[in-house]
Length: 177
Image 1 (cartoon, rainbow, N blue to C red):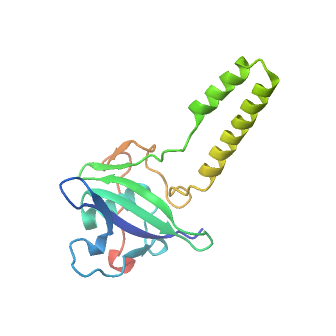
Image 2: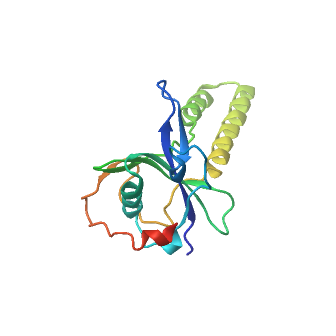
Image 3: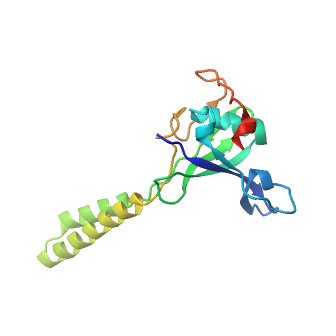
């Protein structure tokens, strides 16, 4: 399977109010912006999430990162990895599934309590519409690296650099860019 090409962006705080923006790692602090840095994972020996995060930490330091990816045969770009990296380890942000579970459960309770037939029909129609909407929205959200890299831990958990296996160094990082 062909691995995607990735674009690494770092979170930069713009002012004291906390406004931020993601910039390509090769454009941080530069007055004139260059073309964004794109890394082809097929040309590297990166096979796990931990190796990718270690590579980023060694080259660009600690911070909050967002990695976008694109691959041949897959339409558009998606959020490949997003989270925090520091000197102790990293954590991958959990994706917030758009969920209407609370609303669906409430509609089911109303359906059970309804006595009139027309009330039941209206509630059934609304329940069907709500569940279809949730399926449609979650279907089109692209997120994650799972088919391309091996995960290091559960999403949202903080992973230490010294956990489990020893991290293999990326061979020839000069060839990557």
